[in-house]
Amino acid sequence: MTNKTSIQGSWASRWIFILAATGSAVGLGNIWKFPYITGENGGGAFVLVYLACILLVGIPIMMAEVFIGRRARKNPINALIDIAEESESTKKWGIIGAIGMLAGVFIFSFYSVVGGWVLHYIKAMLTGEMADITTEEAGAAFSALLADPVTLLGWHTLFSIMTVFVVAAGINKGIEVATRIMMPALFVLLIILLGYAMSTGGFAQGWNFMFHVDFSQLSWNSALIALGHSFFTLSLGMGTIMAYGSYMTKDASIGKTVLAIGALDTLVALVAGLAIFPIIFANGMDPAAGPGLMFISLPVAFGHMAFGQLFGTLFFVLVGVAAWTSAISLLEPTVAFLVERFKMKRLTASIMLGVVVWALGIACLGSFNFMSDVTLFGKNTFDFLDYITANIMLPLGGILIALFAGWVVKDKFAQEELELHGTLFKLWNISMKFTAPIAVAVVLYFLINPLT
Image (cartoon, rainbow, N blue to C red; front, side, top):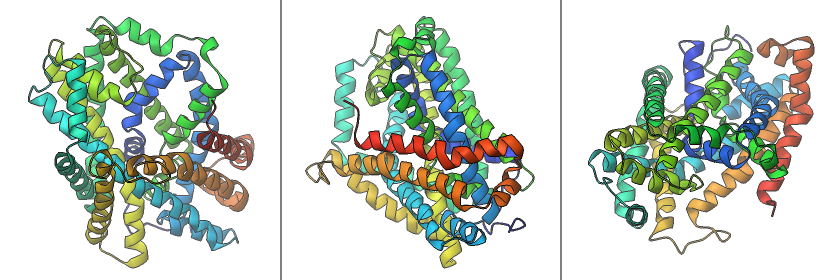
């Protein structure tokens, strides 16, 4: 099995895979959520706990996903079935891939709507619509956007087309080309915005908000938040990393590659915080604004600052690039499955899936206007899909992947792919059998039954 090649192609180099996987991991959550939860949970103390969780849970599960994908050279469902058979176990383990791929489809349906909001704000910043705007006016403008299904549909459609276009072009001519352009652009934009933030007068306050070590603010809930985010931020449990791993070259070290992805993902999140919070503090705004921080507080801040129109536009372009790279990775596992299982042409599979997720996205954008009275278990469509993916499907997928890698896959196969021996392999194996599944199970429990 180790000499197989994927019919989809392979990455040109190890670094392309690192950038592609980082692009998948770096999304909207990195830009506002991670910096915010860091500041609210002890700053530097929280970062230390988060990094420990990345190393003990996130990295080991990611290594498992990559080696399963690379060994089988197939989409997540078929990869799990092949590895299970090779390890003399049941084909039913393929259900893990199905759960992950379905989660990716559900996530894309509402992620594309939010991506549409970002595109709208790029245009709004570029045309000067946010110049000298007040907080009340910014809030009203965002509410008006959500209440306008026609405008939301236009932006949602554009974002969906942008994503499907890249996926349809394939691994080398589509995702790889996009990665080569978008990820360096993301890093350059981050550095530019960081430089701008350092000139605002609020940089020291922003730095202290994120990195001041305050162990008194650390709680059991803080540890849960760190553990949960360490898992979700790496795009685990949805088949993406498994699919991307199937295109990875045989000579690349999985351990070093995954560590690089984890480091880059964390670095982007930290730098994003250092780029955002000085601007918020310089304008005397609330850093705990959550989602409103991006679409209300920041437009107001940029609207009142020197060169705010330029840097506000660059900021939303940065967010758009992060959203785009993540969205591409959400569709890839299912497209790969359709191509491999049903012998579809990639263009046909991409368009067909694109239409499905676009249509599902209409129900999500309708949650804010013409379908606001439609609920599932007390939640509108947007919130329901967000809840079941983040709180149930992804943690469940992560637990099953860890159990599969630790208890089902034969040690010799894992060792061949991971190239780990002795103590290092034992540590990884213990993580898969016990540490990771127990930790993610705890997260799953408290996501469904939150601490009061």
